[in-house]
Structures are given as C-alpha cells and as structure tokens.
Amino acid sequence: MIHIKTPEEIEQMKAAGRLSKQALRRVGAHVKPGISTLELDGIAEGFIRLHKGIPAFKGYNGFPGTICSSVNEQVVHGIPSPEAILEEGDLVSIDTGAVVDGWVGDNAWTFFCGKPSEEAKALCEITFDCLKAAIEMAVPGNRVGDIGYAVQELAERHGYGVVRDYTGHGVGHTMHEDPSVRNYGKRGRGVRLTEGMVIAIEPMITLGGYDCKTLSNGWTVVTTDGSPAAHYENTVAITKDGPVVLTQDDEGPWCPLEGGYA
Image (tube, rainbow, N blue to C red; front, side, top):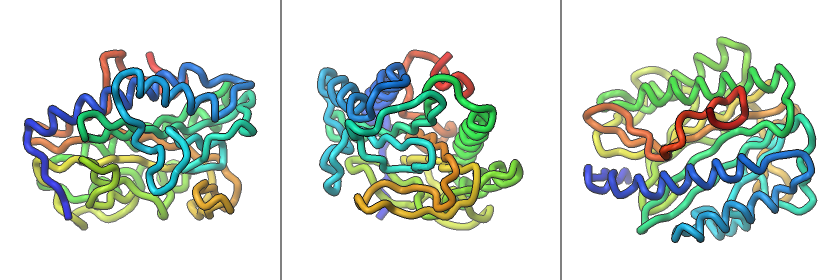
C-alpha cells in the first residue's frame, strides 16, 4: 500500500531528512585510514541521539548498527565491525537514517578513504550522476520505470553494472514502504508517481557485473565478481512543483569527486 503524504506531512519529514544528512556528513568527515567501521557507527549513533533523533537502522529486522558500512566490493548492508579497518584507497558506502517525530529520513553516500583510484572516482561520479538523473524523473505523472530507466541507461552507456537485487522504496513512518523503486526498467512502466508520494532513490552501481550474493552473516551484500560498488541515496518527495529532496541540510552541495562536500 502506498501512503500519500500531505504537504504538511512532507514539511514534517524534513526534520528527519536533515538529521539523517547531518549524521551522514559527520561520519564522512571521519573516514580515514586506520578507523574502524564500528567507530564510524558510534559517531553516527551519538550524533543522532544528541540531536533527539532515533537511529532508524538499529534493530530494524535485527540489524545491529546505526549505519550500514559497505567497503569496496560490499554493495549494501555492511555490518559495522571493530575488525573492519579502513585502508588507503578504500571506497566506503555509508547508509544511515534517523527518526524524528515518527518520520524517517534515509540517505547514503560513498566516501573515499584517502586517495582513490581514477576508476573509483569515475564510478562514484557516474553513480552520483545516476542519482541526479533519477531525481529529475520523480515528478507527478511519470512512473517508477522512468526512474529505473534513467539510472540504467546512464550507467550501462558508460559500461557499469546496475544492481538488480536491491532497490529504492517508499519512506514515511516506516523505513520501507511501497512502492519498490528499481534502478532499471522501461520508460512508462510501473507504478504511476503522484503528488504526495515520498520515495528513497538509491542507485547501486558496480565496476563489473551486477550479480550479487549475501555473506554468511545474513546481511552484507557483495558483488559476485568482487568488483567495487558505489551507492548514493536521497529521500525525495514528489510534489506539484517537482521533486523535493528531504535529506538535505544547509551545508551546501556535495562533490563526489572529493568524497565529501564542497
């Protein structure tokens, strides 16, 4: 069932989106060689709780962390661990969310640990461009297939793999609502987008093939061929005036080529 939000409810959701983005920035500022993903998780949880929010991920279906910390070939749902120590050149995708006044904000960003390779930089640039192209399609009258097509066409035109097994989704009082928002598809197909829908758009793009598998911990998804992956996500409201990104703050735009924000 798709839950349509009123304009007032969309305004209320901005507080959760803002805190989610601020937490993501705070974690990203600490991505450096030698830090563990568990330390990053503690930074996120402390920041969210300090600002009167609730970590959206912690305990969700049993997930143990405040963030998903997915390194290199890990696509999504990486579990924070004291043994996962970041190294020079790593790509680390951080996915986190916050609950404020019962509303969820959900966002992700892929950060560079130290100096990335040119291949990694290009992968992140394309993935971020896919996110921007997809958001442009999030207008009343379009369909979810238009979003998926925008991602798939851009990524595959440049030779990258588009993950099929994991998708974006609706967002509201719970983190995962209908509809499913795939990163591939055909224009004009799928659920029609209407004013008041709120969705998480989250391209997951790889340097190799799109096939994935889940590790024995039951959570962490990796590329089958071991190729690196990137992941960017925003929570977006569909309004009569066009798409409104709810997971944003006052810090200004981020630059994927710098692994952070401008």
